[in-house]
Image 1 (cartoon, rainbow, N blue to C red):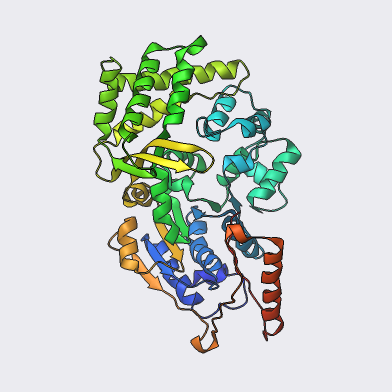
Image 2 (cartoon, helix red, strand yellow):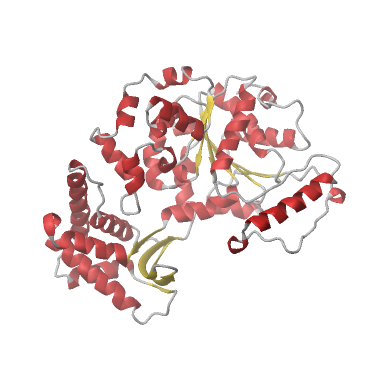
Length: 472
């Protein structure tokens, strides 16, 4: 750390900061320098992405650290790289943005077969382990990450650019991005990479930087609590249990223990929902429900049965892969889900439900649902590992409640920055007859929206920004 309190000026890529930007950069830079967490609230259009990067990069460069810049949508992740590109025009900085494996995979066998029973990450891992992905095998023959980065025309790359590069070289884009992530300053990625416990455990060590030298940025941080809870929650439908029953009921993968357990579990789930109203749910005792199924099936140990099913499913997957078939196993999914279900059974930060839902086009959906209740239990592991966390959004208030909910610590810095635009310059208008709901989207509706936007732009004595919902 240097004595210069305004090192961010070396990285801010524009001629002059706008009102409030210098103050926000000072707050973030000071927090990162001292290793504390910060919540910063600033309105849309403030320039939060550029400000945040400019304030963090001095510490990162001085300490050989790495920024994990988390966002929710692909567009937001690409926006991080766009700002990094501006900074790179006068500073030696580098960065890559990630997307999920499905969006960065070139292997058609994987893309055409992956589903909830056989997630793409699991299938990908099996193909790599057995040397059956040509894209990965070719990437393995390349040099170290530094050489790979030096060979590129630029040191700031979005995920789509990495995919194109992978296609041109017939190499795995996802693994290429992972290699580049080891040597760049900024990695832009989905929240799930840091808040999903399983992904976090696997992904962080591969970055090649100690977590104590990482700064975690949570962009649009108001989304973090819901994302954290979703990542820790899971559901098992009776349809998957029935698939597992058929899988082990006959044929080469027949297994009496697994068959009897799944048959009893199906009956138990249907019995418990027989008197429930449609689209209803009720709490269940997680341990009791699996123990009662074990007893009904005439088996002696729930823990032994669940581990047996998971291991049997793993053998099925290996056998299918060896035969050139897609490694999908429903019995593995049932065993894996119920092991986690039992593991969380006594935790007060989870609720356990049996749900009876009617879904359009699919009929009745009966499921066991494990629902996380406290985002702190999900966010605390990564927050305790990193050097500093920076949460930025336009809607974090009240900051005290947000900081407590995420477990940011008693010394967290809380800062609010107001809009630089005067209230007297604001005019709110609602146009009747325009509708963006799904059922009313049509070419004529889009044209009417466009016409109104053009009407506003034509009489505005300056630039016009148009904000829309992003689903990319």
